[in-house]
Image 1: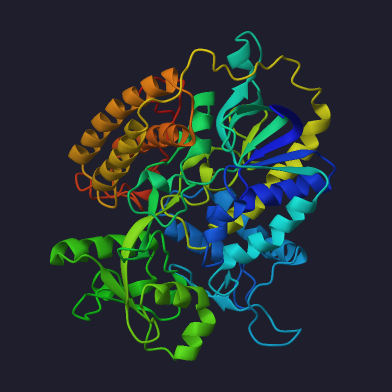
Image 2: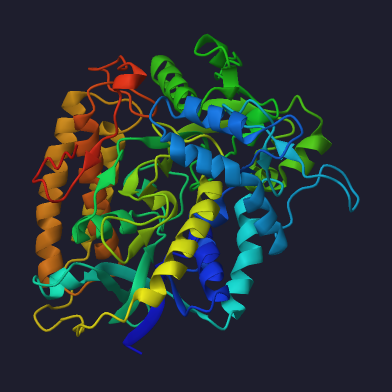
Length: 542
């Protein structure tokens, strides 16, 4: 079928998308759940560490909120932080009710959940399933989604752009009523209409050369929302995970922060521990501090990597707590029970995104967004470890309640939506142009808009991305769309927005460090970087 119509179209089948789909389908709504690849390729499925929730005997949501605010470096939205941390225990219960099996403290039916501790947490509060929490969560939810009579899973479809009423008729009140999507198997474009559309597309870390993310993390939702007229915020805050496996054959192998939480130590090639000289919290400092410290030590000493050593713990304990990391490292000839792991920082999480309210609504009526593609104010200038999956579940519930209340008031789009027009384009003649531009984009973003930035580097990146976008626009306007071209177009736009956001912040804060502005404003003077597509090239909004 080239056309379909739903009550709600959810673009993205990670934790946020699947949790929302289940809530809406259980309420009787017909849901289309779009996944551009196998849902098991989502970032949610790759998540290792766990889900932060204040369920320990000495923990409270207030302590969780305090740690979130400290990690966020003065930019967290307090209302959002309180909402998410208060809802943490309920979210864990909701997931358990749907069959997620988290690691227990000890054997037995009455055993409590084992709680891990990660960087910048003052308590053990990370609920996990060994070291593959995301996989365990998605393994429980995906079969429920696939079996639900009110959910149609749309595999191998890549959203191209949102359909809004104003694009079809400028005289109409603007509203999102669907999306065009490329069928990756047939190469044809499908028209998907809905009363409400939800973006749950994940982040944009594939804009960088080195990343812990799957290939699906190409900023699709952020780019589509911007083109449709939504504001974005705080895209300069890109979280680089301090520890990604360094090996010539390894690709995106994350070494969980939980190893450092259990006593792992970061070492120079000569075996010297270095984190205590950078921060009194040592290896448990927030991720931005640890990543910059590693970057500094690598550049200072000319090292290709540093090392994470947990071999001083009993080997049985290591294998029990980190079975998947043990197995993955062993595939590359590294025995983590007996030797240190070579690691480097890598782009990990997009802390900014599409501006939403506490019900996940965007600037455009009928368009919601949840998860990593959003800016809710939870993460501030640096995300606290294991708050991301929690944010997905909380805002899936918030969005579900609001959408359930909105749907009865909607009578339908009331406008004819045309099919995708391919009458004036031809098949691509030089696909090498796309692959070359993809590689160039990721390399200059890594070199110029990475862990440490300068005004000159940002200006070089701005100039290069503008040239790339001219080539991409010409290619997009003359040839049939392909998966790689759509993703490249989205990544180039997110790169531009990231560069503009970074240039607009004249201080260093959290994940954004600029050598030309090494100091931070007082917290009371700090503000979010909000860009609006209606305000011209710079796009700075109040």
